[in-house]
Length: 294
Image: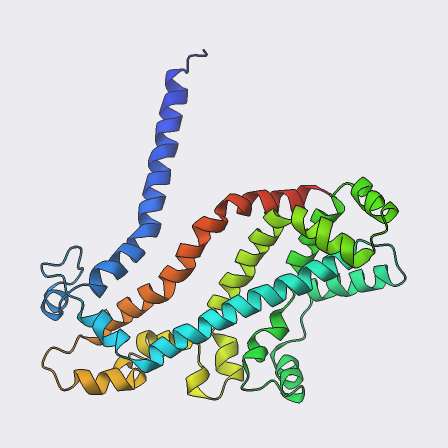
């Protein structure tokens, strides 16, 4: 066993202290959100920086769960996240597999992918395309335009190219066509990559904000991020969560907008945090394999 010198131990101690400090700095905002969301109105108003409330209450959460608008926005966001992530995985994996096959025009389509990776059309052309295709004020306006991320497509293609060619040749000898090879060989062997990029796409869809404001005109179709904007940035919780506000206005203990905003942020963040641990074991493996094999 190799004994470490005093400078090496000191260096490790310093690195550990820096990492712990960085972790605390990053975790403190989340901790503050949790504390404020469970604080009473009196505790919040009496403290400039609330670190631990004297009274734990659920007024803000009761206010939010009484709101049909917020609950509906959660359902809309879950739908867009699940459908959008699955649709993006299907499109990305199928196109990535197609770009691994030797066919006419492969180089041209690969050039188009790389071109869109470097250059984008911009806001106005994108809006005009969505408008002319009749997607305005539909959920597909949030799904189809971002169905394929060029970076994810390139990495997934590299992952597919790392699968031994002998498997494809054996399948061809057994009489399998390209679709059967893709569904029965490539997809089962690509679970780590699919899990990793599925998480990428799910996070993007869950955080959909600007596109929802741009393309969705009906308030009942807004995602949870748009509702959070109304609550937190515009400080308009009582108007945004109208149904709950009318009920809460009848009581003398209406929670302040700040604690309502913190509770809403927490409720909108927790679902995606719950999903991540289930995909974590595939996350690093899928990205690394797709990045280094080619």
